[in-house]
Image (spheres, rainbow, N blue to C red):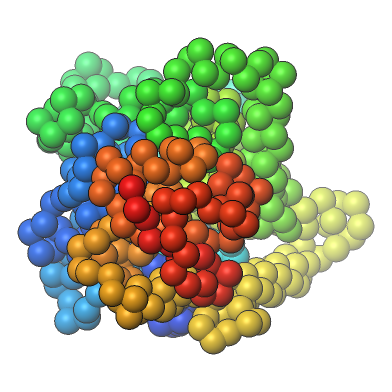
Length: 536
């Protein structure tokens, strides 16, 4: 692969992801709002969060210590944007993620070349990363997608460099390649190759909580390399170098090495119970009380949803069979074996222990690490298909490959354009679909202030970090429960207003749209959103 190829992919990435970055007027959804807001506050030296988006850790109030549920690295990246760039607000927080996105296509192309030793496959891999379909709107915004894709590309590039090329190895075993430990026969090689592996694993942990699962694929790599104890020690030291300071911080702030929410997400019976108040209700007995039929039904639902995500989102529908064919053709590759193991672990974790979080976006997020590998495998699957056509149909393999590669690139472009139009631009604008929620919150806040709301008076709302980012007003999540739960939260946390959006219809708060209780006083309605004053 030529250096010019990488530069062309990089420059084209600047145009593609730059256009998406400029089209997106806001982070776009709660996760991205959260990281943008926390990043901006970190840049100002502020560590507490002026919002509560869940009650799982029994919070005392606001400001609340940051990162009680989500991991911190995306917020640190957002803070760099605020500190190092001249931009203001969430545009500064999102800028580093746009720049990280630009690195993914050339790195994916390099991975494609490392796996196949073919320039054509490398270029097609890079094109797939340039036109990532469902991931296109999410890579340049302030969430974990761009860091995960970058770390995944680097991780699999590193693993590919640790073992013989799968298509040229002299191994007689059909699955496991010949022992590659001779490649790292010196302490110098150990330090150069194993230390980055450990640091990347640590970065994955700091990016998302399920990053801990990557310790198992990393251990598989070390085992396959037949490392001496010194290699395991180097890996452990590198991982702890990044993870241990965060563990110590959690111990100092929350009194626990990990998230203070503990195991409570395991006991959910619906997704909305993530906002349960008080969270002490979430116990094993609560889960069992739902009945085994309900428990099994939820996990079968998550199984179906995550399989759809795998085929339609991660595999982009038309690439799925090619990814599978490429993985089988390169099954002796240590990178492919590691990726398959990691995907299986993430799929199981996001289906059975955490079915609701997994099916509602967790598996989509977690899969971003593996996307560079899938994009790098698809061209090899296409090669397998054209080789079959040459044997069975008399195709000219080179010509057939070029024709089908062009068609696949066209499909990737069409699907990416459709996703960009539907998710970011929208047919009902202005405002653009991606920034509609933020614009709505700004209008609500303007009306609230016109009604006499004082600075610092708190609101209950669907997306607390998004509301704080749009308005500067402290906000708390509407709890899962009936109006009595709502009143209890309002009293405990001194909340003065309720912003009730239409997505709560049909739930425990449905009656509020028709006959609100006496402690709620209607103020105004804006675009199907009801705003109440609360008299606790």
